[in-house]
Image 1 (cartoon, one colour):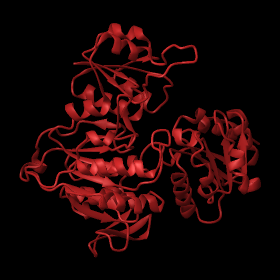
Image 2 (image 1 turned 45 degrees about the vertical axis):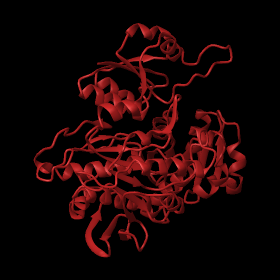
Image 3 (image 1 turned 30 degrees about the horizontal axis):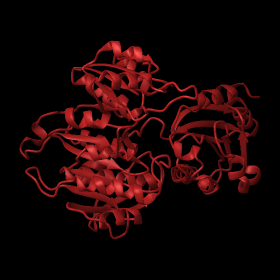
Length: 479
């Protein structure tokens, strides 16, 4: 069929577009504010991208419109529709659906779905689990909210029928998906993950986030329980399984609301899956027995927890933890997860510039803590962050920012587009924090403070005004 995707450049909808092309459909799409890596991936697939949401796109006459959750029925100050195409679709009575619903009906049916949910680490853990299954010969399909470096694409169909690896066990083909709790579409306010109906559900962690759609943590817990309700108890291909972080009180509350599947835990000293040792090299224990050792390039205790979750998920599909550990040894992480964008050599040392997707205070803290643990106490860390997510724009977590930046020697932020002042939120950091009114001022502030041997970590869930390249250019000419 011909599908036209509204909001095609989001990480989820872009991945869906890739799956649809691979499945043989004709795909076109529209969006605003396009930036890599998704825009590059879509163009490489030969997908025609239309800028904006003009009603004239109705002339494309596709078989189906697939609507992303960026689309709404909002109106601009002059009374005109913010998304004229959506209004035209509704007025014409044209067929439309949401991205998660299309995925459930056209891709996930008949697959062993492994859904990775949680406030933090979804993308990385999904990429880890996918790479493990790939190294185990299971040829998984996947849809990841980022581009894993081991695959260089965010989505693929994978093996869609029983192959040699699983023929004897009679297992359906695996599909690993990042299970987002954000709402599905303007006409379907359930979380996206309710559509996926996983046989393996990973609950990685759970904190308050998405203040634009959830009133409190209890509202998010309710959605996570809806996910648990969709996991089977038993079936022709084995039991359903919920894999849960044992350290999270919020997830304990979710489970206590009712669970109808097997439960396996990770993270605490009494969990089914535990780790001992430093995050860069640690032993994995299953129910008290040492089963493997993970030695890899990643840092941070959060990634150690992500690895346990991925190993536990793969174990449900019959992958031995030793196989999983070897796979993680060659895991290359995901683009924009502590991705080294470049270095500039100065007489007194090399300056490194990183790009990271962290935007929630807890993610900012774990990212910086991981780097500090790797570097030791000597080198300086300069944290540069953009409060871009809807939650951060609302200022719902501004009080946690000083805590999140404790491992940084200096912190920099921009205040453009915010209804609150980061300078006030960071006042307790004193001279360690600076706030700018523009991108040029932000770059100037950083360049004025940086010195050889520093590590600059730029954190945002958007393009951040291409600050990484601007910094590298400015540092290259600094004497």
